[in-house]
Amino acid sequence: MVRPRKWSEPWDSATVCPGHNFPAKWVIHVNGPTWNEADAAEKLEKTVKNLLTLADQKNLKSLAIPSIGSGRAGFPKQQAAQTILKAISNYFVNVMTSSLKQIYFVLKDMESIGIYTAELAKLDS
Image (tube, rainbow, N blue to C red; front, side):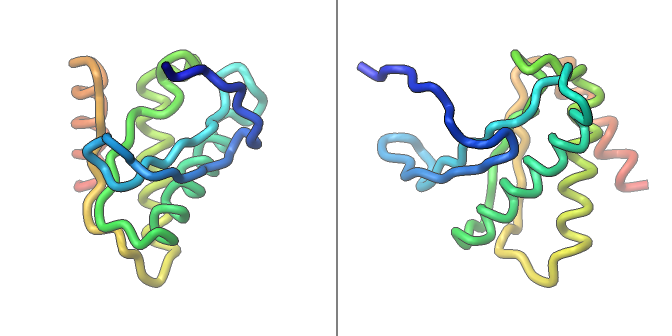
């Protein structure tokens, strides 16, 4: 049985552990902010940057991420999508090289899929 543990890492931290029986070789856990915190969007951007940095440090080629913050953390789905996509875009503009070649979004409802599709289309235009 898996027992829940209290997260003791800072709000913007990213930690990695082996995937064990999971289909992924590595699992990266992040501790993102909640929507009601001051500067929540900026904190979410930093969390995503730390996630991408850790993925590069592990020399990962692909990464699957959920819409961080848009569940129990209370971010409006639109705001979470815009912030996450902005952070990803900024990351790749600012790093010289990256091992990451593909980023997949793991979204659990049609509303989120629609939002991410629309926001990604804006980036392409």
